[in-house]
Structures are given as C-alpha cells and as structure tokens.
Amino acid sequence: MIAMRPILEQDVLDLLNDGRFDGEVEGYVVMDGPNYLGHMLYRIDGDFVDVLDCGVQESALVDGGVRACVAAGENAGCCEFTVNMEDAALARWYGVFFPHSVQPVAIKALFSGCVH
Image (cartoon, rainbow, N blue to C red):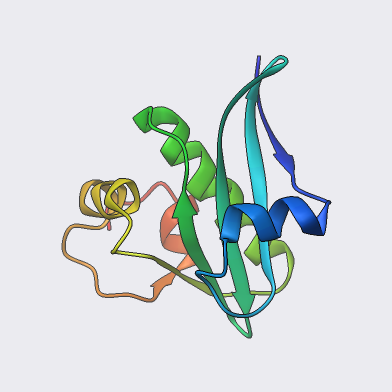
C-alpha cells in the first residue's frame, strides 16, 4: 500500500534539502509498505505553499505527492500554491494539470475537479 508519511526528523529534511531551498522546508516520504519510493519537499510561505522538490519518478506518485503537499498547505491556511518549474517532474505535472495557468494557482483549482 502506497503511503505519504510526513518527515518529522529535521536531520532527514536537511539531508534531502541539501541546502537548496531557504526557509522552513517540510516534506513527505513516499513508501510502498517498507520500501522507500521517494520524497516530496515543500515550504509554507504566508498564503502560499511552494512545492519544491519531487524525488519520485512514477507520474501517479508525483500527482499524489503534489496533492499531499498542497493539502498540507491548505490545512495550514494557504490559499494558493506554486511548483518549482526547475524540477523536471514537477514541471511535467504542471504542464498536464495547468497548461494555460500562471503561478500561483488557487488551491481550490486543484481540488475542485473543474477544468482549469
């Protein structure tokens, strides 16, 4: 069973971040039972959640990871999100789901089920 588990250990976040992103970075590990499949990193910045890094390869897992990060931001009070377009997997995801949108994107656009 695939699970997105919050990364609670700061040293793990620091290792995955490797100094690439400023501010308080949060994340998820993506697991299939005991097997590590990758990670997602994000940052909550005021009213925005920034999806920073995608360490998974399978497109369905990328989608689930982005949605988990955005949902965490929404739960923290964010209204909009961005994705790091320098990350190839995140740029592909954005091109599929929001091909004609400019960032930031309203969180409700991701979870509403309406055409964007």
